[in-house]
Length: 77
Image (cartoon, rainbow, N blue to C red; front, side, top):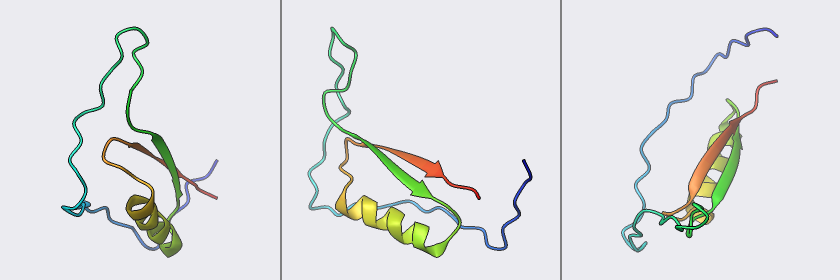
């Protein structure tokens, strides 16, 4: 497998959620199972393209809630 060098490096930034979204505490653990009671696992596929940033921003605005866990899948060709 070869290392792919990209011309443009994308930078991350902090995301500030609108104040209209209610603040939810940390996900609680059930005593019996140890699973999260709230929140979902959201998988977002990204690469180094500009459409990837748009898809990431769209998912944050339209899908994600405060208790969700976001997983990024970095696709390299």
